[in-house]
Image (tube, rainbow, N blue to C red; front, side):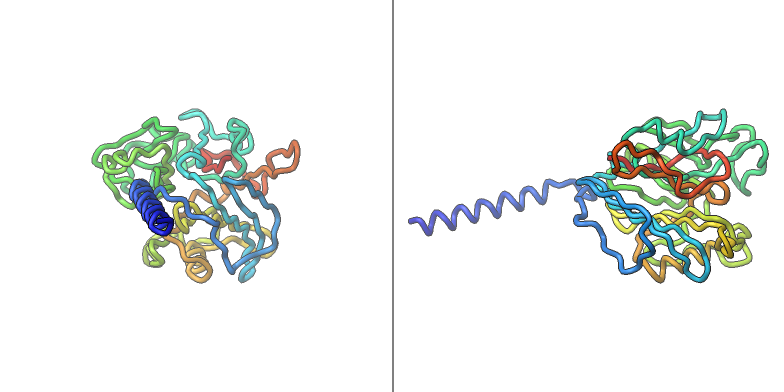
Length: 300
């Protein structure tokens, strides 16, 4: 009798477990524990809690000075946020931006922008320069669930935050993106997707000068829903920055990413964090040379 009862209890537990697995929304399962990577640099900072783990490392592959940040976030749909400079008015200092969100402990510059000292829009970009002074690029702009720009009929190429984490879109219809209920979007130029599923998606050499010039870079890679890698390439010492082709090769060699995306770089490049020390202040680990349009932040 006891044996029959034990078997029945075991069967019921299995059924409950199966039902629970089936009820989990697709794409919302937490990937735990954090990814472990063979490739590493010199540890500069570390943060670890039950919901957020990241390390900041420095390295110089091929005489290119880099800062590598590995991130695990438990609930990306809640813990990844966008902070913006005043819309249409001015750019902002990244540290001051992050102070607006006390729970933010890591942030990087994200979208590009057009301003009055750089009035030429990318070829084929809709509108006129005056419409886009000090605003993010992209046909679709969403911040904290509010749609600030929606150019119907103009495909969206950029990043959007949904329940599935930060998702890459390449020439998607705006309505299809909005159907996923994004809370945030970030966008730069149309060709900023460097890799998708391990495949190089950069334009052929000779067709996009920006990709072949050596610059400071800010690049985000998604490993899976909960794991992301940031790469900042800096001009320092003998390092003059890197081309986007070099960046793509770097990720191909050292990481298995779902996608790799080039954020705004150059003098906009910035990495800001707060350690877990008592009364720790925000630290500007990658110093930026100018104000920025927005941040991509990881929070508690």
